[in-house]
Image (cartoon, rainbow, N blue to C red; front, side, top):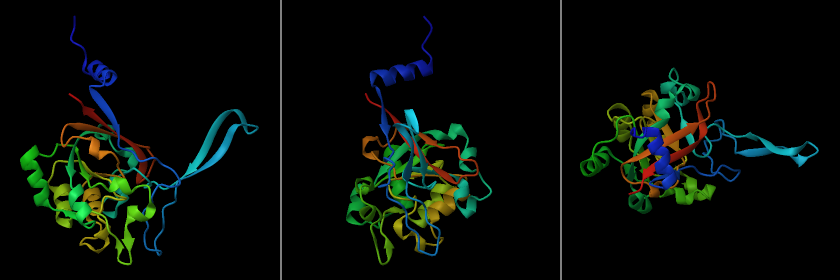
Length: 261
């Protein structure tokens, strides 16, 4: 008999459970935490549903809604044109679909973020991880686990802001530049409200993850959940943003395939 195809083997493994599908997506609702910018800037809209009909006179056999929200609400995908450094690069509808399925590694800094919510990952942290686990994946994702998804039920706890601004973990400016310009990955995924650390407004450059990643045709995934269920290496991430023409990003369903032996 002929050897089974790769796709047939994948379907069989999914059915048998030797490959698990892990949902990395936060539920999207009116309670979803939102980024808050200084009042002089435009603000993103909270997610809301507007009922069109629900098995009633407006539509006796069907239920459906209109919805309104910002492109960068909840678990979402940042396209290169989201930032001024990438303004001439792809919008979210133009991202090559082959780049939406990619290997991923998980770097766990939960303990560090618990001790210091302003914790910053440095290049040396990543290189130390590589020394133990192997190189970052070519054309893959670096997913930063900090335990921040446990705060996602509360806007206040998730943003963790005071008079000096938000306090959430992330990358140092040097690490953001290195990840964008020297590492082989195609993007950064985080559990926080954005790819940058809470203090990144005061960095040089400001918001370096956005500035460097978008400017180098790389991507961001934010407000991920369940990274604790992924191994350090070996997972494959499927990121599904809406192809919004000229859009700078989109809420996304993000899944991970994990081989369970």
